Image (cartoon, rainbow, N blue to C red; front, side, top):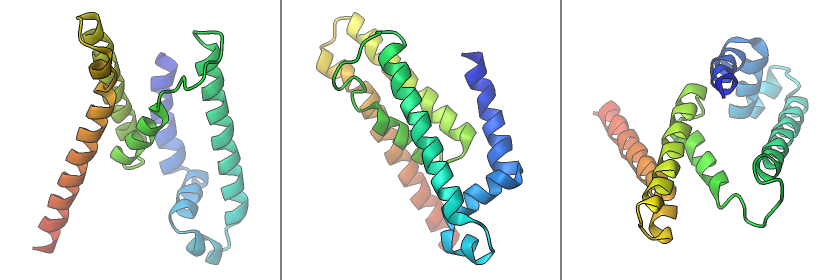
Length: 152
């Protein structure tokens, strides 16, 4: 568990301060500009896509064999979309994404806690999704306010 928290500063260092990370971020944001500069953009894109797929496969392996030791259909229950929302909320900054993941994890734990208090499953199971929607709405409103401030 502590090792995962140490990975966040490592990601910040690798993706924001090394030439390799800067190349990957640059290729992801402006593919054509990276090609113009002579970077092997297609090569990097394929490698990063393969690495992402491998990490997703390891996550699925951990989910299916980590605590349950069996596979069941729909075991993720849509939590992958919450991960996508965490990346959007954190604007692809590793520490902000980690904070968003903590927020969503706490909302999931709150749902389980409320279920123990006797609330119906339908309400408690929706807690992480409601928090995700509220966080994205809040972030969108804040972004519009910031954009309006710049224009004036």
